[in-house]
Length: 127
Image (cartoon, rainbow, N blue to C red; front, top):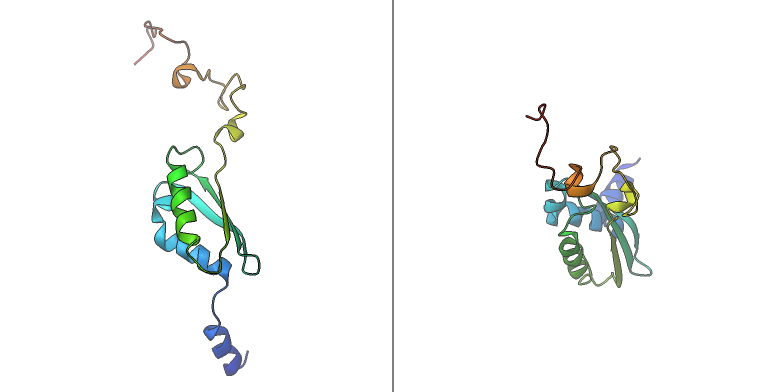
């Protein structure tokens, strides 16, 4: 790489994809702070379409819709973005959905996975 190539590479503006990724990591640290992940799956400057996927701790989070709305609201103010989709996987997708009889650990999911409803006799081995 020549010096002029290095200068032109250094002076080049980051792609839309890179700018969105940088914005997410800089302006939405709450995602990572709560064990979530974010990834820009598509960022097309010609069509103005951006697709972001949240995962990790965001999957099944009760406030992920607020995070999604905040991301959409901000990125739609960018002149080069016309359409934004933020996908958050449903937590039930990895557990097999509401019809699954057991959790992935083989424990009955009633009463938060503790088993039978209302059992007041935990047994002599219970701590």
